[in-house]
Length: 161
Image (tube, rainbow, N blue to C red; front, side):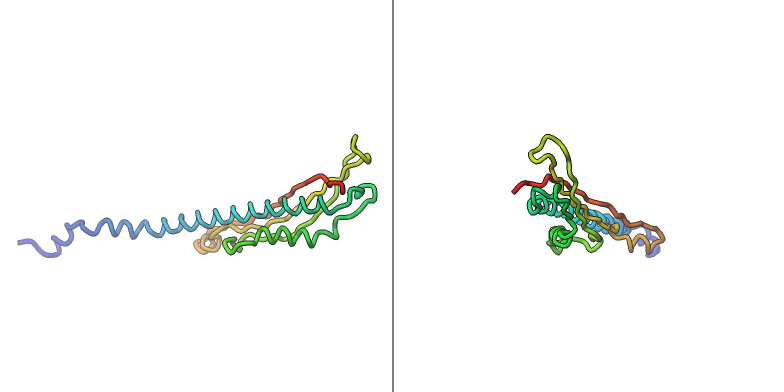
């Protein structure tokens, strides 16, 4: 006669579900990291596109004689920041962990055999602050993930009007 406890102990019918229950939290964590990482990369690429748009805009609105008149581009910084931020936050899919802190512009003058002697080069730089996806969860278990602060820059020649 076999004891009921021994027959229960020998059965392996529920082993797969127990193994799945053990692995499931790690799978969900990796899935969350992959999705948040992709969203963060998407937000970075949207910021790069916004900086390119802002640079293109600045190169078209500056007068061609900006170098000879020693003009400043600081008056355009608010509008350029609006262009970059609109491009970066244009969708609800953008993570809150990516933010633009500063947008600044400058005008460089290149001498050469150009008409007028000098050619203006407009540059736009956006300072981007990124926090790693699920950083709070990693800090909860004792790890530390510092944030990243980087600059995205683009330049374009000032077009004559």
